[in-house]
Image (tube, rainbow, N blue to C red; front, top):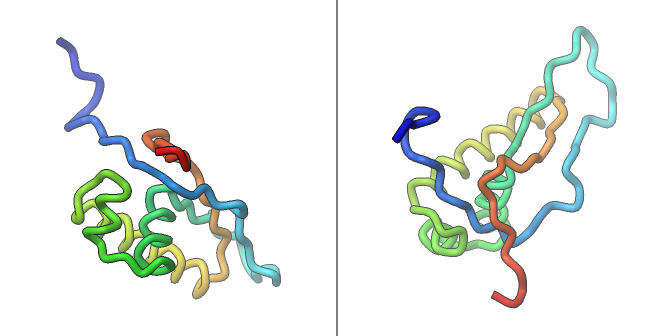
Length: 108
């Protein structure tokens, strides 16, 4: 059976909350050439929300999202770096789906 890429297929991520605001930009324009926007995935946003906003442990967040603690750690580290980069460099931040998310409904 042919494979269409390298490595394993990405596991689906359970997302409980889609952000209402998905595009953030600095109030004041930058001087000099504009830098490209920073892209944050729903997975990174959800990890940041569960751990930093809701106060869950990485293991608890992993269970809620259906992924390992290591995956949460990587997503959280990436999300935190992107938020810091946005604040320090005054760059746009756009939150986008990656394609492997499953939106959890309240009935589940």
